Image 1 (cartoon, one colour):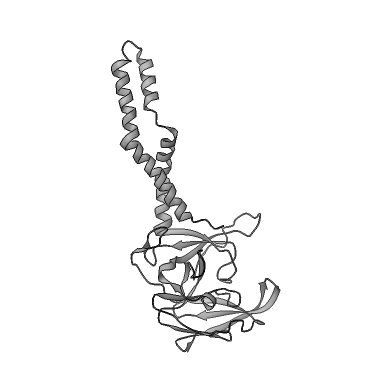
Image 2 (cartoon, rainbow, N blue to C red):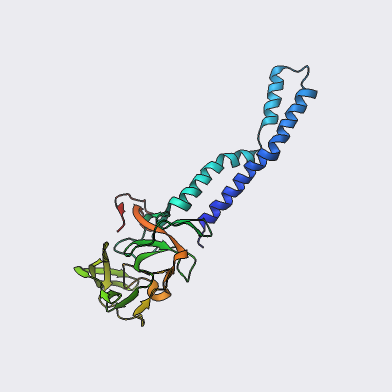
Length: 279
């Protein structure tokens, strides 16, 4: 089961902040009144050390309030950073191979495409629009979880993908052969091809399986306004807009900017030798 960490953070910040506020408005006042009552009615004739000890005990915050006041600033800072600036994300599948590998931990710039409210995702400040070729994290139309793919089609574009070739608005996208490779799949290793694709300002690698045929009957899509057509760089092993359609602007999470750590599945230690910017 996927955990909505933004929702968890909002709940924890609300609880800790609410307890702190409750203490400021009500509970602290009762402690001060107890101290005042003690000093006026019970402290006379007692030693200073005993009075100080009793006052310290009466001044002591409840443990839950103490924890709330300690955790609230940290949780609030994490919520702000994660919601509006940078969010970590782990690559769960091989759909973006060779650009991103399973086990890569990436950083997502939440500010790149606008400031959005946590949990609900409503944009409150516009910054920029996604550009063709950028790697983007989003929520697809068919499933409420994070996906990561490359922006191929912009609003209004006609995208055609046929015989392993990409066309945008009728123009073929330049693709240069790099080398023959072996592609790991669920049915074993298959012969494939590594290519370099030129999406204008972004040149990036793609891989294809030589034996993969036309499992998708549809080859042409028109991208509606306010939507983006997303594809994985592992072109024959990626569930993307070719299957579940374009992604709404409302479901954008952010721009993937860098790999900061890698961990192979299983009981393996993380490594920091594959850190790189994402193109």
